[in-house]
Amino acid sequence: MTSEETNVARSLGELGITYERYEHPPVATVEAAAQYWTGIEATHCKNLFLRNQKGDRHYLVILEHQKKADLRKVADQIGDGKLSFGSPERLMTHLGLTPGSVSPFGLINDATHAVRVVLDRDLKSAERLSFHPNINIVTFVVSASDFARFLESCGNLVQHVTV
Image 1 (cartoon, rainbow, N blue to C red):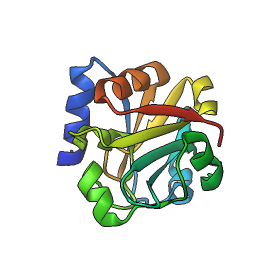
Image 2 (cartoon, helix red, strand yellow):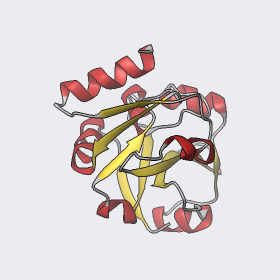
Image 3 (cartoon, one colour):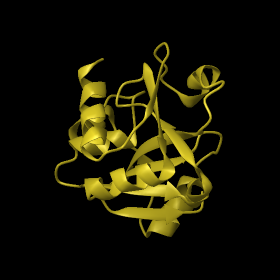
Image 4 (cartoon, helix red, strand yellow):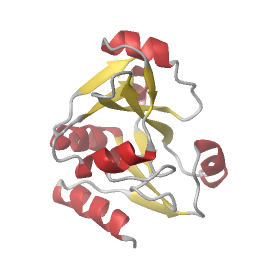
């Protein structure tokens, strides 16, 4: 187990959250990961690290992996201007992650709760969700209710939008 994965497992364990663990080769995109998700019963997610135009607000947008995010529509719903992808440096600063490993589990590294979480409303109907544990060679599956508890424990602002 890598240190990234160990930190996520410890955080989940402290909350009494169980998970299923699946190993696979490194994958940097959901398209690359899809072939390894065969047989894993869960809603697989895409995670986008974004910033506003001024660069003073950062967002983690989470949606079902096959959806395309309309960033203008998301920005309108969260009450912010133009959104764009955050740089690798910003991603490391705020979530302690590298590109290709973006995950809501990175929120455990956001001590100041600076990153705002934006969830696609359609995820509310999911029973189980899958995410990388901050490294792209493993996928964790958790129940949707446990994921909600995880998000609550992180203390970041969470908003729901229609993607």
